[in-house]
Amino acid sequence: MKAYVYGASGAAITDIAKPEPRGSQVLVKVHTCGMNRADLGMIKGHVHGAAGGAGTVLGMEFAGEIAALGPDAKGLKIGDRVMGSGGGAYAEYAVTDCGRVFPIPASMGYETAATLTLALTTMHNAVVTIGGLHPGQSVLVQGASAGVGLMAMQIAKLKGAKLVAGSSTDAARRARLKECGADLAIDSSDPKWVDEILKATGGKGVDLIIDQVSGKLVNQNLAATKVLGRIVNVGRLGGTHADFDFDLHAARRISYIGVTFRTRSIEEIRDIFAQVKADLWPALEAGKLKLPIDKVFPFADIAQAVDHMSTNKHFGKIVLKL
Image (cartoon, rainbow, N blue to C red):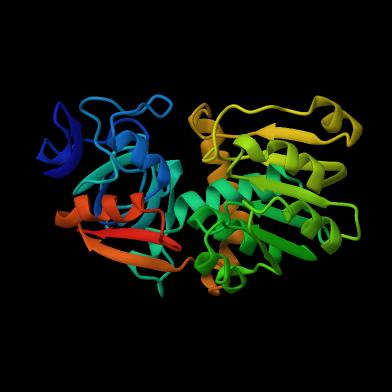
């Protein structure tokens, strides 16, 4: 089968053996793939948790049809349309645990389905389960113009947030954040953004920050969070190290929580998928949760798709079509 593999000369489309599902795994005939920022590092040969390096089939989310079942796979049958996550998504066939796929709603196409799995699971976990958002509270999503950020704002609105703010350093993308639920769009490269948040919250700060940027924003985030507020660290696009104001953190008694799928067990991941299905599926089927598709590339043009993502000018998701 064709797959996009990291090798000695970098990443390229390569012919490899089709994988076989084992245990609780399923084999999916892939129709579309969603591209994600973590892919860029692995395409350059970096390790992302336990994934990456020579011989890695790249890609993290996909949509397609069940082609085969492992002996312990439950709740699915051959021919089911599914969207899911797991390694090796940029290929004609991918394997993943049976608990890491969702059924594709009947009215939804494969291109749309390829955009949703990681955004839904990452941000339901961050906003609702870990972030503990309650109706009437306020939320700031740092790095809101990425697919997962756009989904975070939609989930916050769905859960009754009274104020949803989103950040982007790009003026064109910032202007579009209201399309996905933002009441306030800020430029996190502007030193005055904390003042904007405090003004919008009556001087108190937001109840919850979903932070995909981190780095040098950490102390501004502390200043923009209310006393007894929460910060959930989802991403580190702005850097993994920075000065941290421990006194401000303590004075505001902020709960600061880091999350990643890289160290979660399969049992934890199955639980997250089950929680998303139970809590968000009616809204998803009704079209209340969806992501804009920036561009669709044929799988053969994956190098151009990588270049497009690397420019960091896209809004929403980039999709590959096999």
